[in-house]
Image 1 (cartoon, rainbow, N blue to C red):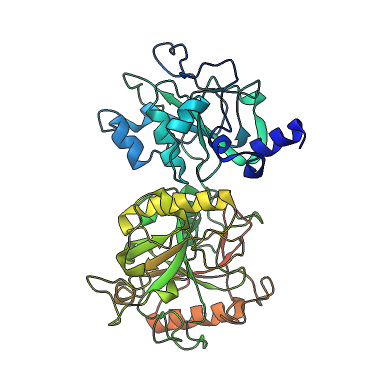
Image 2: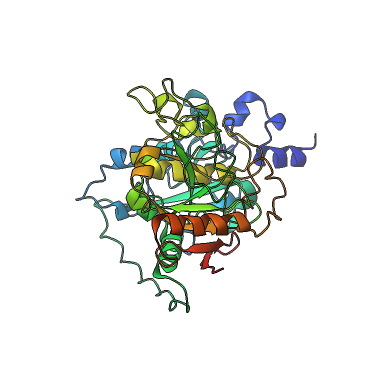
Length: 440
């Protein structure tokens, strides 16, 4: 093929244009660079970091251990800045290579798909100022980044590092968040609290800090809203031993359609109260956890319903695995969920090839039932008459009409008011205040 076409294929990540050895050398230095990989040392002090870009200072456990991040060496001493869709390489394309082809052939990059492993590899080399990452086995260490000269290629990410020795002073506190607008007439403080938690949600092992926890009515719930549709698993003998839910929050990576990522665009449901529910495990996407059953039924020392027999994830190499994250590593599942969504294609263990990357969280059903009615914060619906997805006949129809009857039944059953447990409309395209109280 013409050399120009071959180069374009190489830098777009097409391995068909390269022999195996060249796959590792896709970002090799220009020919006049010596094979020893020797470069002039960097100036002392801070590594260079371009400004005016997306800020991301999250660190992996590896990075914290490598850097010795403690209370005396604050997290803010290390900053990673991520530029999605940027591919930087030698010969006038925005970067110089840290590693020569000969070095890469003798010392291959990390054989893992995780950006954390790629960034850790950068930290092990003093000359490394950034990494370009394109997925499994595509990790390249860079220096002297000129972002304006890098190529725009959706598959690639450039992560730029700043690091100071001794640690720099803590970064200034962010400006106070703008207060939420006054509560609209007739809206309960609970609805405003839900919108605030959605807005402030972030990677966290604390359920209340992570976002809003939603459970959608499906084929496992009572088809009769006048029954007890809030009790999990009424429709199946093998699933009433857990509750599945998803975490939603403003800063999560959007699904391709630009909406908040959920299981169904139609099905109604309820919102779990983080103060009255116990998380058992977390998956970054829907792995079809119904198949993870325990015999005898229920949780034991060797099996947790919905959690794949305690085969816990260990690091980000598990993105294509059906291993769950333990409850004290919820933040890892949330970040892995975003990684899968950015990557875009179906992970091996994902149940459906539907372009949806909602998380799958498994909760303790006994704890939930023991703490009713406090375990439920609100009921919600997305569409009035299941008109959006048009594919939820298996699970429903359980949309607006079903939610209104179920909500009224719940209030009556527990002698509650609509201010205590409201019914809300959940707008999947509203990333500011998606929950709006409804009356009927």
